[in-house]
Amino acid sequence: MLQRRERRAPWRVRYAGGVVVMAALLVVAMTLALMVGSVHLPAGTVLEVVARRLGAGGLDVSVLDDRIVWELRLPRVLGAAATGAGLALCGAVLQSLTRNDLADPYLLGISNGAAVGAVSVIVLGVSFAGLVGTALVGVGAFAGALAALALVLVLAAGRTGALPPTRVVLAGVAIGQVCAAYTSFVVLLSGDRDAARRVLSWTLGSLAGVRWSGAVTLVVLVLLTFALVMAYTSALDAFAFGEVSAGSLGVSVQATRWTLMVATALVTAGLVSFTGAIGFVGLVVPHLVRLACGPLHRRLLPLSALAGALLLVLADTLARTVVPEQEVPVGVVTAAVGAPVFAWLLRREGRSA
Amino acid sequence: MRLEVQDVSWVRRGARVLDRVTASVPAGSVTGLIGPNGSGKTSLLTLLAGLARPTSGHVRLGEREASDVPTRERARLVALLEQQATTSLDLTARQVVDLGRIPHRGRWPGSADPATGVVEQAMVAAHVAHLADRRWQTLSGGERQRVQLARSLAQQPSVLMLDEPTNHLDLGHQIDLLRTVRRLGVTTVAALHDLDLAAAYCDRLVVLAGGRVVASGPVAEVLSSPLVERVYGVRAEVERHAVAERLTVVWHP
Image 1 (cartoon, each protein chain N blue to C red):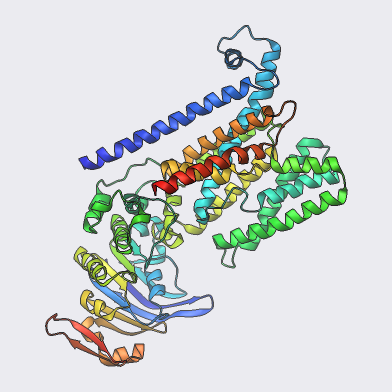
Image 2 (cartoon, one colour; image 1 turned 30 degrees about the vertical axis):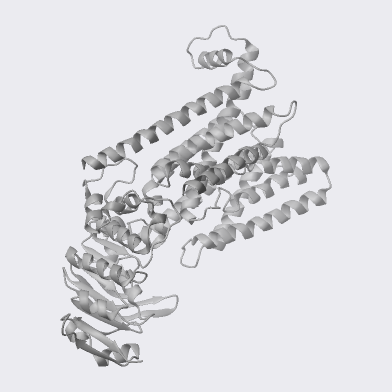
């Protein structure tokens, strides 16, 4: 027993240390994100604005600084953190559930389905209930994602109501391809260059449109997601050796699979409707975190959420500052920044194994 | 815990995989399930483990209907050791064994295990204590199967189900694994292909062919030359080995 404690304690301490370091890095990154932009503000000003708004001092704050930090940058930064955390959580859960390393949050046709909705709004100018512009693109994307999800589930579910992972992956690919074909067709047919550019930038994702209402929605959505998936950490661990093994460990395999697949798909659809389909975060962050802390979900999920948030906050900051006077789609940045890091870690892992 | 199968039929994807099977497993015994490929051994184990519901008939764990036992409670009563467990995850042996505690712990992370030291005891019992910090991917086939046995034991089951547990093991590891199981004294049902191993380590046999029970009872009463010929279509002599003092099967090509 003594020996066991000696061996285990350092792991817990190291993990807790990792969480604290990641959380601190996230706070630093968010502060940095609030400082930089078309107008650079010193850290002191940023902190004073936030402190004043939270009712703690910081009396000599200019109206302009307040507007830049509190109205424009903070919602976007919070939205980025929430979206990154949400994508990483959904990716981690789906990879475990399907035992597929290539699974990402868009597995169930979400991104292509959302693109169909978004494109219909952008190119065909569909209008609904007086909604126009960006807000309606979000509504269209959400509706498209839900429709694709429903089709994938109908295709994948067997007659017995089981949801075999291979069928889910295949159905997701099939529906995704149909949606992609529709999207390309509509864009080409319209012949509208501006629409084509808007569609492309939407499919690469952007956090530019996130205001306070969106940020709060995203944060609440992701906190709920976190609570849900943390209730399934043991069940997800039990899938390590497949579904028969999970069943023999007392996990209700079908109920768990349906709950988590539908829940993560709905969350992803929600994220996509605000930000477009941001690639790479949900696929790669869980792998990076697994390299650091192992595959057990009670460690993997909290750290993935933090790492996803950190990655997307940094990527979005780069996206809006790297080219002056212009925004780079954040999906381009996540891939450009994340992929080399991932490759480096894979090689390192390869040497140590 | 005593197991009872009464008049069980199971139709799966349109095929009748078990046909009016009746058998019993006395508490504390090691019972071998033997029969050719596709005879229904794994199907019967699946039903006994409560992982599926038969089309008709009764499967009883002790006094209760197996399918009435709630999933988590069932996992505390019955553990299953599969033919070959595979994962792509980078788990340590101890983490694999610790999976066996899932049905005993609460669902939230950090919830306390009602018993302490079970994982360590299970690893000692399965002779894998020295492998605790090794990674699963670096273990040999024999080591993996023993770690999975330790995982089953960590469930503290009243019944152990083994589905052809020795299939991928060499002779030494086959004997080692079955001897370990034998010593536990837990009610055990083992699907086995090797008749010599079945004769050496089982108290009783249930012989299946085409989804039906062909014979069942104590090993010495069941295992015979005519039975082997009838069930496997192989001419063989079953005789008591003078030195080993157990039944052995000698087959003729």
